[in-house]
Length: 183
Image (cartoon, rainbow, N blue to C red):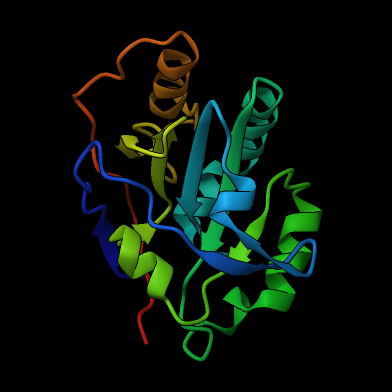
């Protein structure tokens, strides 16, 4: 596992558009179809990463809580499946079903979306406001595998601010996790 941290895209950046294959619905979905008029969370994850395993159950809980408030969650896996076959679309479908993902789990086969977002690690979170401008990027919370329980506190603080029409805190910390496995 190669440890990496997120790139911290500039706040206010417009969300790069995409259309990717959804491993749950088995059809292509685009950002323009999925985006929310409240906020949209784009998170780069994968099946094998211990950092994703550490937060996965809490991520599902947070997504379920905030989706009913109008916030859209979108998960994307961009890893090279020749290098990590467990991150392939068939196994993505299986993982999404076993964890009861209530959000799309998209496959970025060409890695162009990860590159457009400047994603570096899994997990890597990007929160866009109603105008698809970046309001938060970075980590889920301060916990790590074998170092605390995942709370999602930093992500939920940003989402709560957007729901309350307040400014998201400017102090944001990069996510740390497994590097995206580039082709």
